Amino acid sequence: MGLAGALAALLAAAGPPAATADTRAVGPAAPHGAGAAPVDAAALAPGDLVSAVPQRFKPDPVTPSTARSWLIHYRSTTATGKPNVVSGTVIVPSDGRTGTRPLVSYAVGTVGLADHCAPSRTFPAGLTREGSLINRALLRGWAVVVTDYEGLGTPGTHTYTVGPSAGHAVLDAARAAMRLPEAGIGADSPVGVMGYSQGGQASSWAAELHGSYAPELDVRGTATGGVPRDLLEVAEYNEGKAGSGLIAMAAVGQDAAFPELDLDGYLNARGKIQKRIAETQCVELGTASWPFGRVDQITTRNPLAEPLWRDRLARSTLGTAAPRSPVFLYHGSVDTLIPYSEGTALRDAWRARGADVTFRSVPFAHVSGAMAGSPLAIAWLADRFAE
Image: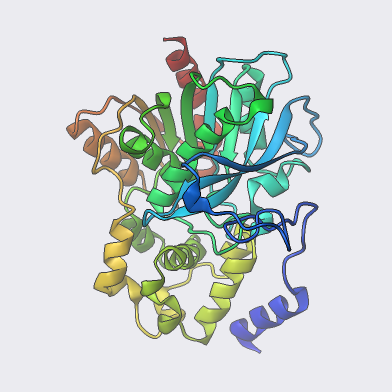
């Protein structure tokens, strides 16, 4: 049958991804499911709430939590400056406290492009991979808001790796959390931004966009790690390696943000199967289905060599603007997915523009670097909140 035939058979047998308990469609056309009144996102301000529904938060499958939590939908902005609606989760410790308290806008690492992979869909069962890391912030008495990013958990394809869109979603999530009355988070609350890997890209973009896009937020600092600074460099690094499936996922995400890229026009039959896997599955299958792959195996010609593709990918390159508030930047010294040079290059670019950057090298690979760096990031944010 061959690999392509086997994967096609697998997808046909599996059918579409299983729905979770929360299957409402939320977006500019249908915020609360079929028949709901349309939402005019353009009539809303960035960060305005579209809806909020209480739901359970569990940091992992076995650990209980008394924290209060809401699934939210809020107005944000695409990479091209258009209004959109994004989903996310607000989580607040059940300590009776209201008003000013630290708020962390947390950006998760790669979960996949399918809606059922979104953090808001997996929190109730404790299946969000970074749930235990997020719980560390809650245990300190901080509120946390977690964006799902554009197109993840809402209609449309997730714009995976599109930096400006992700940065907007992270900042608007903080705004939305403050505008949720039930959460009791004061509008003057100090804000910290935190994320790793895809979340590192998102949080870093939030840091760069803060001054121009959401200057009213009192962002005390951004803790960001494992950051893919330059997507072309990261793609070249991963071609033919274990992380090659992430290249296909990123291509789908970029094409979702910039339809003029016409990804379908470059794909061969194997590539179209890989695209469907990326769109309908979580990261485990998205990567396992194409390990050690090369771009020429799934394309008729290489889109990464085309000027239009290179231009759109360059729009997500970090380091061209200085974050307004301090940054704690960390990177695994033996990272095999995002090369260590990405972290040092971003450090140098930000410092050259006058940013206050604390850099920490952790002696770990990519996933283990997230675990090792999280306590350092939390402690650093605690110091910023105490200032």
